[in-house]
Image (tube, rainbow, N blue to C red):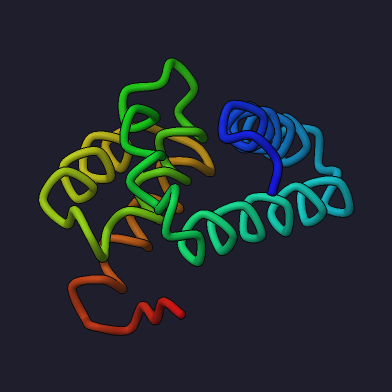
Length: 115
């Protein structure tokens, strides 16, 4: 497996590229970045040496989309921290705010499934 620092850098980069792609209306690139984010979170979760908790510092990242993706990934293991971040993001405007609001809503309804 790649070094943890590289994995985390790739997570941040993919989150930032995803947000930029969405703003530009480039769904192809946005979807590609989503798959990268999804693969990284799956890899972290399945690796007992690392774990999803490695994303916890990103709950305070300067990029709203990094915070969104970290909170979404962490909500099953750190629900209060993640919900707090998502609530703050949901108060904003745009796609990140909408995604945060929908994530919170679906979490509260019990509809989010994590492998």
